[in-house]
Length: 271
Length: 253
Image (tube, rainbow over all chains, first blue to last red; front, side, top):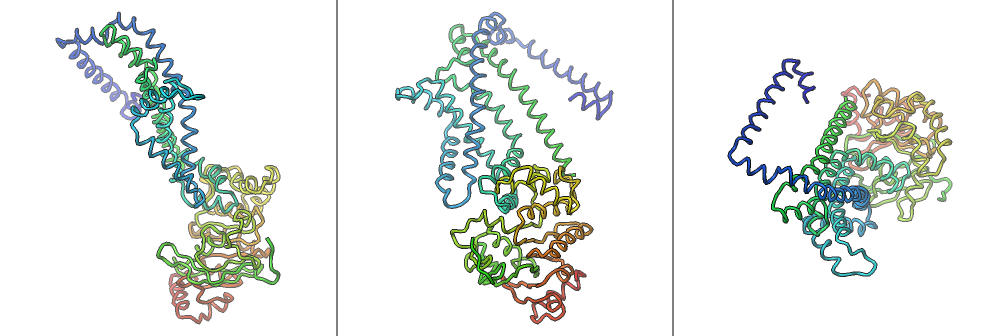
C-alpha cells in the first residue's frame, strides 16, 4: 500500500503518509491506554498470565477448527457444483432433478446456520440410529457443509447463468450432449467467473467453523469458553481471536490480491 | 438414418415458430437441393436466423416439417446429437470457446462427441486451419485474434465433421468491413467445392455472386425466391422491390 503511494505520489507523499499514520495511530493508542479504565480492560482481556494459561488448550482446540475447515473445504465445492449443475439442466425430463436442487438450496440457505448446527449436532445423535455416526462433531460439520453448499451452489449457478446462451448453443451444435457442453464449454468459463466470490466464501467459512462449539465440540472457542467459565477472565477469548485472525487476515489479503489480478487480466483482454 | 432418393437435401414444409406471442416463422416453405447455395435475405427480424437454428434443432418448431434427405428430423425420435454431425452451423458472433486454444475449439466436437482420437482430430484440424490461412493461429486463444480470424476458425470448427450441409448465420455482420472479404473468400471456396449451404446474409453483392437461389423472407415466409440474377433484377413482389430499393440506396448492392 505504501509502495503504491510511493509510486503515485513520490517520496514526499510516502513520507507524509508514514508520519501521519504514526501520529494518528499513536494518538489512538495513547487515548486508549491513558483512559482511567484501561487497567481494568487490560486485566480482563490482555492478561499475560491468563494468556499463557489458556493458550495451549485454545491452540489445541484451534487445530480442530483447522481440521474441520479443511474437511468442509474439500466437500463443499463438490456438493455445491453438483447442486448447481443439477439446477442448470434443461428439458422436461430433468424437472425432478431441478426441483431437488431447488429444494436443497431453499432449505439449507433458509435455515440459520446456528439453528441447523443445533438441530443436526444435538438432535441426530439422540436418535442413536444404527449405522449412522453419532458424534456431534460429525453432524455439526454436516450442517456446515449443507448450509455452505447451498450458498456456494448459488454462486456457481450465477456463474453458469453468466455464460452467454450462445456458448451453449454452439457446444450443442458441435454434437456435444447437454452434459458434455456443461463440462467442456460452460463450467470452465462459469467457474472462472465466480472464483473471487468463492474465495470470499472460504474466508467466511474459516470463521463460521467456530460455530461447531455450540454443540460441545471442543474447538478453540469452546476451549476459551471453558477457561473463562473457570477464571472469569476474557483473555482466553483473545487467544482464540488471535488465532482466527492469524488465518483470516492473510487469507483475505490473498483473496484481494487474486481479485485485483483477475480484474487486471480481464481488462487487458478487453483492450 | 435412411434417406429417400430424389428428395431435396433439405426441405422445410409449413414451418411455424413462435417465441411467446411473436410469430417468427409463419408457414415457411423452402427447398435446398444438393450442392446448392441458398441465400436468405430480408429485413432484420424476418426469421432468417430462426430458420437456421430450427434446422439444427437448437430451437424446436411449433408446426410443420423439416426434412433432411426426405426424412423428417423434427419427429420426437430424432437423435439431435448425431444429426448435428451432418449439419454444421456458424454463428454471427463466432461463439468460439474463449478458454480454449483454436486447436482445442476445433477438435472439441470430434474428440468428445464423435470419439475421434486426439492425434487424428488434430492432424485434420491443422490441415483445415492451414487451408484457411490459420495454420499459425492453432495454439492462439480466440481473444488474441481478429474477428475475421475468429470467424474463419469457427467455420473450420463446423467443417471438422464434414457436414453434408453448412448453415451460416450472418457470419460477416459482426466484422469490421475490411475483415468481411476474408470470410466471404472462405465461403466462396466452399461453394466452389460443391458444399450445400444456407446463408442468412446482409451482403447482397455477395449473395448475388455466390448464391444459386436467393430467397426473400417477409413476415416469416418466403415471399419470393429465384436465381440471383432474376430476383435482384426483376423482383415481382412490391415488398421485395421496396427492400432491394432500400438496400441499393444504402449502397449495399
